[in-house]
Amino acid sequence: MARHADWYFDFISPYAYLQFKHFHKLPADLEVTLKPVLFAGLLGHWEHKGPAEIPAKRVQTYRYSHWLAKKLGVPFKTPPAHPFNPLKILRLACALDGDHAVVEAVFNFVWGTGGDVNDDAALAKLAARFGVTDLAAVIGRDEVKESLRANTEAAIARGVYGVPTFAVDEELFWGFDTTDMLLDYLANPAMMQSAEMQRLTNMPMAASRKL
Image: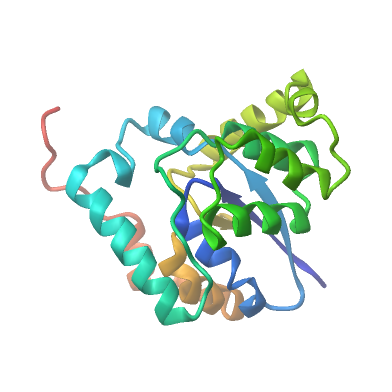
């Protein structure tokens, strides 16, 4: 019997791109639904900052993702400016129902070749590959905007706080670096029921910051 996972992502994340490039490691019987979400919406809800909003973390994120991609042998080039507004490309993905080929093409454009999402001509050419001849009209449809909004709200309701995140059963696996943990869980779901995993899940807080 096929199993199912939802993959929440935003093209703004280099780690989402790197994880997408490793989908070949997933079990053949795992059906994955690609769910474009607005990362800024997650940040706003959970009231925390993204990596690019903390100066030192921003630099390390760019350097580390560049280094990691090279180490993994994944084509990689950071776009000319980051963070950028991902709404157009997220809505394109939504308009085409999260199609795998579309998502792959957009990721390759942004992070594989360092494409500029503010280059309307380049985006139009990209969209035309999938039969979209009037990009502005397609991504401007109310139902497309609502699809992205609904995906983001559903992710928040599920507890998703960052991208990329795999949601399988009741479990969330955030970040490219949890890929191996996800694979272990898929091979042995009972791992989350161990005494130590349960203790960690329910561990109380001993102190908290005053905000």
